[in-house]
Image (cartoon, rainbow, N blue to C red):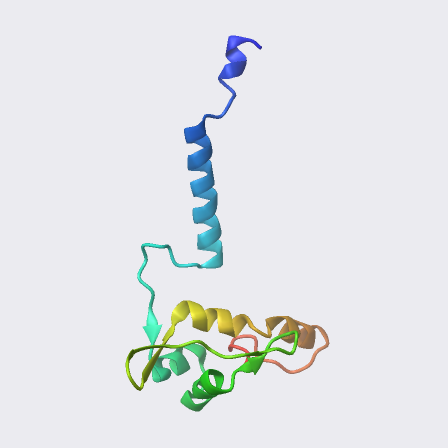
Length: 121
């Protein structure tokens, strides 16, 4: 190996920076909150407004859930910072909204009615 070839070898520091950059870009693309970023929580009314659905629909997602693409019942997770006042994390709401999107894409492909701008309920 020649000394000029050594200039082409990545150092441990280079690889760590590269790895961090890749993770940051993936988080940005997937819109995952950074570890240091504070999570946003919605009330039932706030979640209803965010999703474009009624408050009763959000309560149904919490209490009864909905079926995923495999037919498994999935409920919308909540947190209670005070008893009787559920809060829904924005990241949970977005993930819950993605449940069923595969079947929604199949409906669109087959020209079946579906509103892609709303979360699938």
